[in-house]
Amino acid sequence: MRIILFTGKGGVGKTTVSAATALRCAALGYRTIIVSTDPAHSLGDSFDRRIGPEPTLLQPRLWGQEIDLLHQMERHWGKVQKYLAALFAWRGMDGLVAEETSILPGMEELASLMQIAYLADSGDYDVVVVDMAPTGATLQLLAFPEMAVWYIEKIFPFERKAMRIARPLMRTVTDMPLPEEGMLDAVEELVKDLNRLERLVSNPDISSVRLVLNPEKMVIKEAQRAFTYLNLYNLPTDAVISNRYIPDEVTDSYFDDWKRRQLVYNELIDDSFAPLPIFKVPLLANEVVGLDALQQVAEAIYGQQDPTTIFYHGQAQQVLKEGSDYLLLLPLPLLDKHDIQLHRGIHDELIVRIGNWKRHISLPQSLISREIAGARYRQNQLEIRFRGSH
Ligand SMILES: Nc1ncnc2c1ncn2[C@@H]1O[C@H](COP(=O)(O)OP(=O)(O)O)[C@@H](O)[C@H]1O
Ligand SMILES: [Mg+2]
Image (cartoon, rainbow, N blue to C red):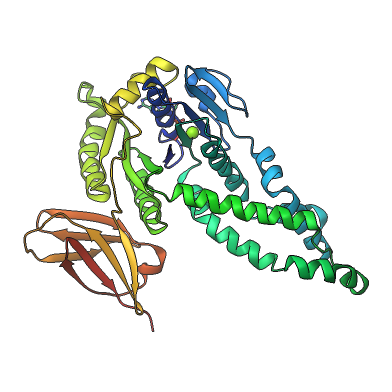
């Protein structure tokens, strides 16, 4: 059982790359389902067919599903949301505002991600390919299960037994809406499902996140940030797909500048995401619609390789706390002794150079304002120390 998740900035080719991956998996004999959790569904456009909110057979062993957000919300969050809306309205919030506010940020997409756990547990599929919503939102969501559990436990700290006894009494002293028995069941169920999802997506033997990007400055920047947070949240990331490079065959001088820039950006991509493998997909002569074009993309990404392969094991960056300091750890292949040069770029950027080796890192928010106390190379790892704030 494998779960392969694709993320990246809007428009970089997530849907295309996910569809190509799923198609190749099915062709290799895996029972495969591709789901999109991006509310802007376009899986149907990629396959050039209508895909419904229920698994739709597209090819032998290949199903597609465009998740219905509203339905998923109602199913996983409906009862809880109704209670929150009632509670907010009781506190004096306007009815409509209370309804809107009761949808916690991210809950809609999280509910749709929960479908992944359901599909994975169904036993019907060998591979679940997920075409995720654009980077920012999705990343927090994957970390969200734990956060959501924390929130929920804060909002509903009621002991169920205590509630059963207290409810009649409280009814006589307050008109505050009290959670019903069914609602507490729903919360318990929700917490269970969230934990299950978290366990699945953070298990490197099951799940792999793949970052899709284009050789363009803004896109790379966002992918660097995404990569940092994936590492921080312990989400196993095993490959980068650099999509839409202009191939050498294109000799039109109009593209000269683009091609020159791409050389620079290809290097930046290597420096930012190594040791992950970087798969390159050329800009095709036309938009990618239909099975033939998707097969072409799959060929470009994987060649003869099986997409269910785990392409990278381990974590390319790690942050550990040591006393009040933080340590940023980067696994490094055996290096000769060289000077370690650290250079702070603008805002969150850290550039590390050791001899010919170079790495661009986007620092997580919590490290940006800290002073770097030093760096050393130890046990095949580079250790960069960020001084604790006092
Ligand atoms: N390698 C490629 N060559 C040509 N067109 C591409 C390529 N990759 C994606 N496209 C086209 O770019 C558009 C956006 O791709 P899509 O996969 O929908 O991006 P996302 O899901 O990230 O928003 C689509 O029209 C798609 O057909
Ligand atoms: Mg898309």
